[in-house]
Length: 140
Image (cartoon, rainbow, N blue to C red; front, side, top):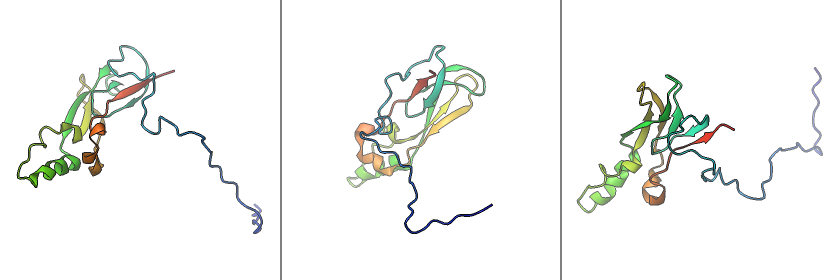
């Protein structure tokens, strides 16, 4: 095999596409054909698991429906609790379920199908995004 060297005048081609507008789905916008509730037989291509019960097809038992969600304390919730402690009170921890990690389970076979962990401790300062709805994309 022959190896060719590039001269100093040759420039490599970089395949970075140029977008005139920002892709709205990469920015967090939910597609218009998203399924939010029980899929009721609609084939699902992909499920986005977030804070709320998600429509899904279970890989373990084949059931389709909505997941059961369980919560676990996160660092963001602890920080949200510590902020009012400076005033001598801590009332946010139990009520701030929106900042806790979410674990999604199949209601039929009880297997864990996904988790949504709140790893961004700065989420405490972003109340509009505390609760994000789960959804699924139907198969085309």
